[in-house]
Length: 230
Image (cartoon, rainbow, N blue to C red; front, side, top):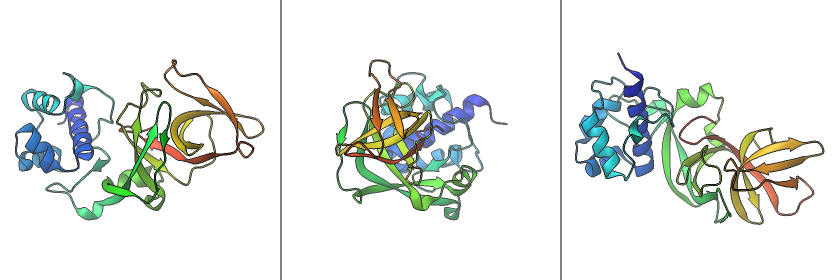
């Protein structure tokens, strides 16, 4: 039987694998075997992730002590994604989502490069996407930069963006293009196609924009996941 702590650590391990690019690389940096990680996070879940390995992972990836146990990602069996297929997993259970060479700034904004510049892929579980009614054809992944959306989104988080959701929804988090820069911000709707752009960090003040009447403003899509559901 899995405890909440065990499931949380497995979810954190999934996050490290996704961020690093492969289970083999996580195993190398932590000084353990890939097959051992597979036994922890694979569908059969033969092993638990103990304190010693949890501390080694935290040290290897520069995470603070206790990071593996923090509830900032879903405490669910092996999480929604894996960057490569582990022992016991059927590749048909996954779909690859492109990760773009582009950053969504959480602060002052990042210049937007070509949108078709794909730097890699992350593999999400089909069943996880289906439960959220997400079509992989319209999904992309970008990286977050800055701290103005802290504590909801952290600097370096991986953002899953649904490109179909371009209509603002009150209190939703969207990726905006403002004057050729990208921002991940929370939107509060007003009458007349006006929105107020909010940052979850109170140090960053909100500002209004008029959709359709303000030049250089586009909604790229809605952020639906950032290591946890949004």
